[in-house]
Amino acid sequence: MNAWKELDKKRLDKYTFIFMYKMKNTILSKRRKGKFMYYPYVVAGAGLAGLTVAERIANEKGEKVLIVEKRSHIGGNVYDSYNEDGILIHNYGPHIFHTNDREVYYYLGQFTKWNDFWHRVLTQVDGNLIPMPITLETINRLYHMEMTAEEMEKFIEKRAVPIKEIKTSRDVALSKVGEEIYSKFFENYTKKQWGVDPGEIDTSVISRIPLRFNRDTRYFTDKYQGMPRCGYTRLCEAMIQNKKIKLLLNTDFEEIRGEISYGTLIYTGPADEYFHGKHGKLPYRSVDFLMETYDLESYQDAPVVNYPNDFDYTRITEFKKLTGQEHRKTTIMKEFPKAEGEPYYPFPTAEARAQFALYQEEMKAEKNVYFLGRLAEYRYYNMDAVVRSALNLYREKLA
Ligand code: FAD
Ligand code: UDP
Image 1 (cartoon, rainbow, N blue to C red):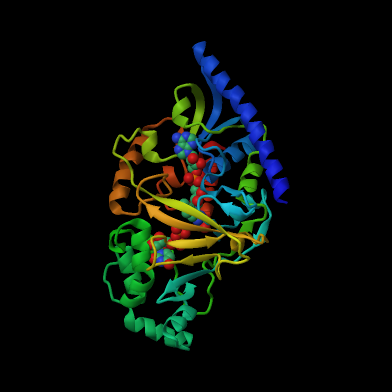
Image 2: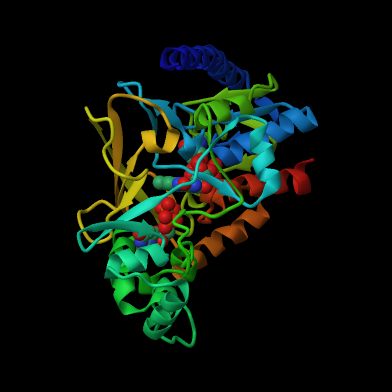
């Protein structure tokens, strides 16, 4: 299975290498002759946003598309690969697909079969590993009690802090669960993840984590949830099989911006980079991903374990427990959030949003350019929301 996967990957690499060699030469020689290579559609960035829109343009509209990607691979942050021990890892952090959007689920389902998967997370609090998000199970384990759902409701109600106007993630947590649970589960994790107090970030961030008065310990309860059976990279490869789609890897859009001409550009990179930082550098949160492989069948009791109060990392992912792969070794990943580096998360503050709004004004003035995806739209999108946004863009503006 792994050997087969490797072979297949080499085939893609060889194909893209030959193509890219020719492509770069063509671009350069045309420029030498004072002409520009023309594509009706150019997509900057081969993440889920870019691939979805390219797939639609080629397969639905029947038009040619050039995808320009600065990394050496497609998939953006959903890219996965086999490491040297043959374990399938998510190179840019754990990715679990979950959605209530039926169309998005079936759209992606054209390119992959799904493995059934219900994500579960444990969190280390007071030296114990207990289920996250906060459920009846979490509270009973935390306080060594045997409460019923009704008792939990009263218990939480007594502790919840009344806050008139919910303005920040701190307000969200305090008003839902009160001081003690807030400080044990949310405060320090959030400080590590974002580098600021939860009182400084948008309500939407901690609101991602539900509070449940039952024993359902799943991290997500969306109707559709799963792992692509052969991984995300295979899913992404399947999306761009059409010969009308050309892929140029290892190329920053900036490098060829002045060398090609196009009818329409779909840009999925960071919003501020497109405008050369005219209104200042937009803050994005970055992460260092540290991998470790152990000669162990199993490393931890859940696919993801969160560490709100201990260590410098936020969480540990054990990949085999996400992918279902069987292997005598196991690879884990620790996540160390940081301010500088590859942009992964748009920064969720009113100030950052206001700065982004200046770029949004600039975007309006761009002719035949659409800004799409987590980086260009500056939104804390999950995968399903990115695909939704791309399908909408195609339908409303490009079809
Ligand atoms: P990206 O994946 O960032 O793709 C953008 C691409 O554009 C990149 O490949 C980049 O190299 C390229 N690019 C940028 N600038 C240029 C340029 N100038 N020229 C050429 N190429 C350029 N979502 C979920 O639904 N479930 C999860 O469990 C989940 N976990 C996550 C964990 C982490 C650590 C992170 C960071 C994200 C997670 N997400 C998850 C979110 C998910 O990764 C995103 O929603 C999705 O991948 C965004 O796709 P995108 O195409 O908008 O952006
Ligand atoms: N969060 C927290 N404690 C946790 C898990 C999450 O305080 O144990 C907060 C934190 O602010 C985090 C946000 O909830 O950034 C969203 O968590 P999620 O698991 O959705 O983060 P992602 O997987 O997107 O990094």
